[in-house]
Length: 132
Figure 1 (tube, one colour):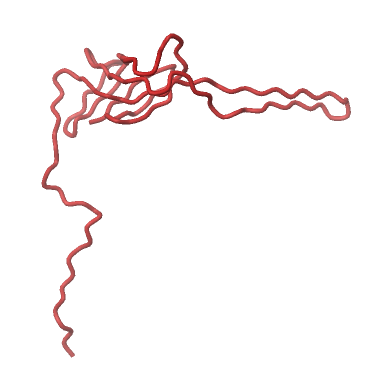
Figure 2: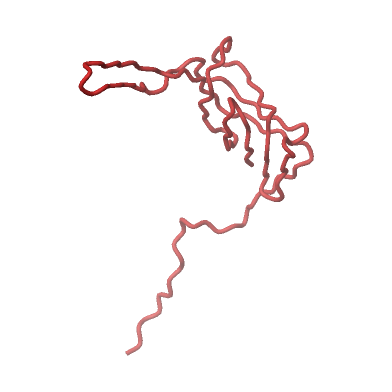
């Protein structure tokens, strides 16, 4: 089962157990619960629930793993040639790391495929002796 949610004007495709880095949210501590109620689409293996623009009553629950983490350093350098003018700055964006715990969509049926063949298994080869 997966869902497409919005957080911080970005859309994320999430499943249960996924780790997700969202925009920093002040006031959250590790272990706190976060609810995303802007769900655009959900699929349980059968038919999809598609919102217009949101799926009514759908929520995605998540648990905060790391309350504040920093992203990669972005360096900004501006040079004006032949003017001896240089400016060098940097920036590190803050993020909150969460783990998706549950996807709740009322009325969506979840289909589980139990008897499907997997691609990892090699196909059975005919071991008959070669005729000459």
